[in-house]
Length: 160
Image (cartoon, rainbow, N blue to C red; front, side):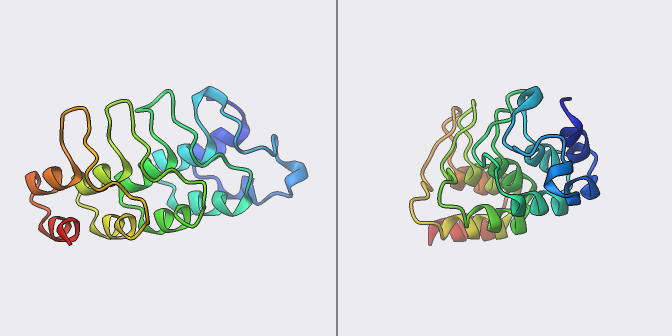
């Protein structure tokens, strides 16, 4: 799985990242050992508090992809899981790619809409430059997926 920081992230061991930076195994948290980053591992294993903590440390490649998983970025994982607090933090960074697409063409907005995460969809829709009409490889948009899965509140948000 990579180094100690990756194991700590996957298991939600916040104390590891509370150590002085000189004690951390590798200070560059953007290092992609085993095809992923500690931030992505924390999100993938539902350690939302650790993910928020990692974002405060800096040095993270926010647009790195989980190349051993579904080719998602941290924003995609957070949107898919409905982690609105993490999405809110990620959106404060100028270099975050809000319209990034996975290998199957899904965007963070499509993932949030499909999953019924209305608060995340609302956050993403407020971002200048968001592409609400993006389609995945199946030709589906956030609106068509929200409608298909009965997420009425999200449909209303996307139509506004």
